[in-house]
Length: 79
Image (tube, rainbow, N blue to C red; front, side, top):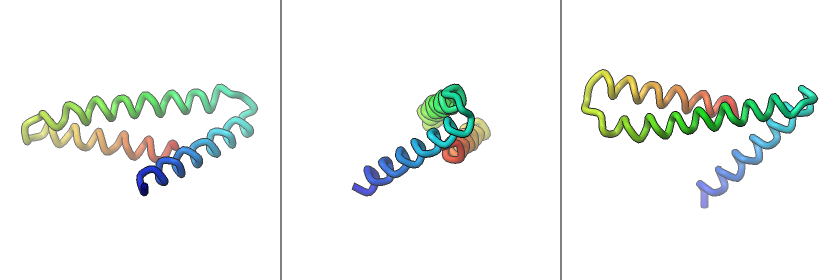
C-alpha cells in the first residue's frame, strides 16, 4: 500500500512537472525529450543493476554500484 501510494504520488508529480515544462516551452518537444531521457536512464539502471550482482567483489563491482546510484539520483532529480 505504501509503495503504491508513493508510485501514484511520484507519477502525479512528474505529470505536473511535464505539464509545467510544456506550458513554459510552448512545445511538446521538451517534455517528450525529458520523458525519453528518463526512460533511457531507467533502462540503463536496470541493465547495470542486473549485471552488477553477478560481479565478484572488487573495483568493477564498486564502479557498477556507483554508476547505478548516480543514474538513480539523476532520474530522481529529473522527475
